[in-house]
Amino acid sequence: MAASLRYHGARPSADPLPNRQIAPAAAPSWRDDRYHNQRDAHSRRLRENWFGSCSIADGNRGDETNVLLKDYYHRVVEGLSIAVLVLDRNLRLLFMNPAAETLLELSFRKAHQLALPDLMIGAEAFIAGLRHCLSSGHPYLERELQLILPPARIITVDCTAAPLLERDPPVELLLELRQVDWRLRISREENILAQHHTTRALVRNLAHEIKNPLGGLRGAAQLLERELPDPELREYTGIIIGEADRLRNLVDRMLGPNQLPNHGEVSIHEILERVCGLIRVEAHAGIRIDRDYDPSIPTLWGDADQLMQALLNVVRNALEALGDCRGGVITLRSRVQRQYTIGAKRHKLVARLDVADNGPGIPPEQQEQIFYPMISGRPDGTGLGLSIAQNIVNQHGGLIECASRPGETVFTLLLPLGKSG
Ligand SMILES: Nc1ncnc2c1ncn2[C@@H]1O[C@H](COP(=O)(O)OP(=O)(O)OP(=O)(O)O)[C@@H](O)[C@H]1O
Ligand SMILES: [Mg+2]
Image (cartoon, rainbow, N blue to C red; front, side, top):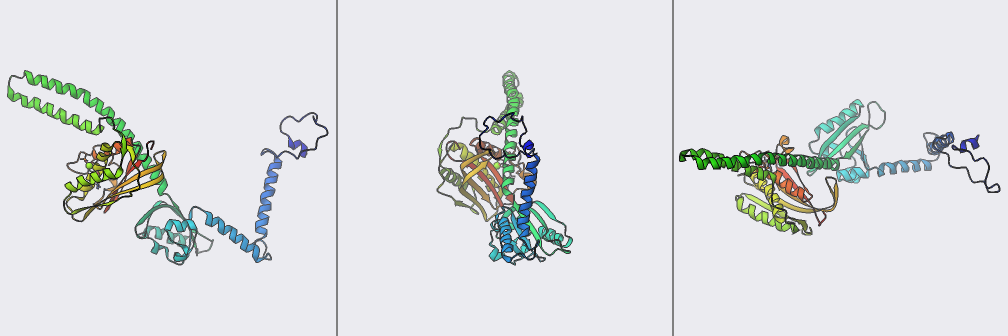
């Protein structure tokens, strides 16, 4: 029977080497019953080994095996990349694994017996969810939950809480937190890039459609002007020509720089200093400009004038957002990021330039749209500054992103370093 199971193809009719030593049977394939029998036996043996040595299965087994088993499970929980916490009925911490220590930036030695609500700022809804889970015994799930950890660190997590043991009412809560900031950042950046590419294609087509007839319109108005017998009537042709010029300038601005980029070695700090000098002249005395540079950032390969234009557009926005208020602070920060992904491309080194201000912030419903052309929150704004800046940075293989809440708005320019980015 065993021999008939050994082969699935045609069985050899005669042994070509009659005096050979018989080799061990070939390993059974997954289609073979023997494979499944062996696998079941293996897992049964494993179960018997573990639970046989455990006091649950046999109260007579020694303490030593119990300790070994506990140590094994302990190592499994310690090795998890997801943060695991156990809380008592009063939400005091009974256990946290190393991933939880890293996430909360807190050692278990210090946090033991501390109440979870004291470790977070303003997490009332989350805490209420955990309490409800304890009182009802029903699991509590929350996706993309923002937690503020003292002093002001914001993390976003997917959270699952469930009673640890089946007791009525539950006495302990098992809380799992998975940080999703990184995943959210990637998808947000992909959105910004996709949004930018769609807008660019739209603007280019629209510009083509507008500029062609506009040239004809302007030329016809000029011809008409020459033919008009009454000079007073020239006022009307003047209006046509003036408006046509205004429209062409607007379309040109929407298209962005029309010269070929002049690439070379660019020092990020030189650009930051030039922008800082210009803004100092424009800002009133109540506004402070702080600089916080990482001097180790190497040069990047790009067009210095265009990059300066992009940065200036962003810093000017910060200045305009601060308006006349006293105590306004604009911070220019430079850092370097290693192994950083922008869109789908991973870069060895990326320069990160933050332009932060303590102004009123951007309303949440506007935040998704500010990089579109013609979107402005200012009565005298054309809504092109950020779209032009995004375009320039994008042409350098980078990206501008924004995070804003009242009192803190940060625009981040990410620029790959090195010639190939
Ligand atoms: N730091 C900031 N704080 C608050 N709101 C901002 C900030 N930066 C940009 N915004 C908002 O984003 C909008 C779009 O900015 P953008 O630079 O594209 O256009 P604009 O400043 O209105 O016009 P312009 O074309 O003259 O730059 C602004 O009108 C403003 O409402
Ligand atoms: Mg602007």
